[in-house]
Length: 318
Image (cartoon, rainbow, N blue to C red; front, side, top):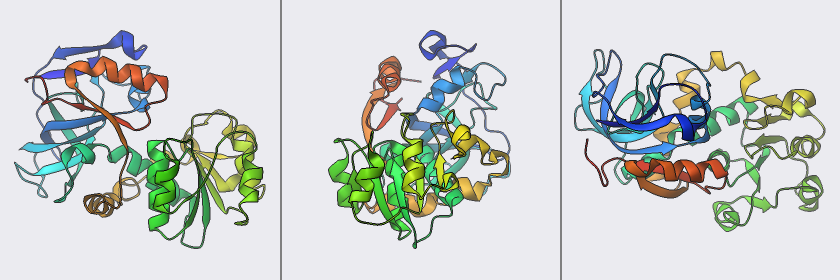
């Protein structure tokens, strides 16, 4: 089969190759799928640079949708031929989702009404957003500011918070301003002077803030917006500035204690909402697997404006 993977660490454009590899076998508690779609993310490029080091070679593409074609020992909740979406077992396999076949370590049924391309855009954005909102303790009583609501994680977080009954203030550029308003969020421009713009809305103090935007010096403004308490702010992006300000961040939120329920518990609910047209993760563009370098180049600009997906079945064979 074809797979995009790396044999040593370095810059993604330098170390990644499209090559031929044996079809992987699913071990106990795993399934193998014929990949329909694989979503790429900045996390993939971090893996190339040495994040979570392990045995090599290693593939990219954690978010996958496809059709089950082989089942490992102990798996009883799916069958060959089922449509599923989930996460590739990238730590134990020499390939991942950017391939003709992929072994999944977590998977969920794709409900009727949700196509496999849209399903592949869900996992990372949904799991990251739902986990961080849970860690913030979000309830229907809260007003939350989502900074970077035009990112895929931010866009997902806005929808989850609204579904939970919270009031949402979203910072975004022009690309997604109207869509976010249509969802029910109050939208303000990001950048310098954010605290003053939020105050001018007349909605009162935000109880919580979730920062998903690329680092831009916004954390002090978010602390102001939440009444000066940095513990009410959680970032998944500005991991350098957060400790200096006392702001909570992804890598100090006890990641070792994350349970499968925290990471994946919301998947069935929001997959169903996606099938009903009430939840989505924006897709910027799709590519045949052979055009993976074009997807990489767009991703590295930081301005993809949505998920970039590889579709292995288009324009190629295994």
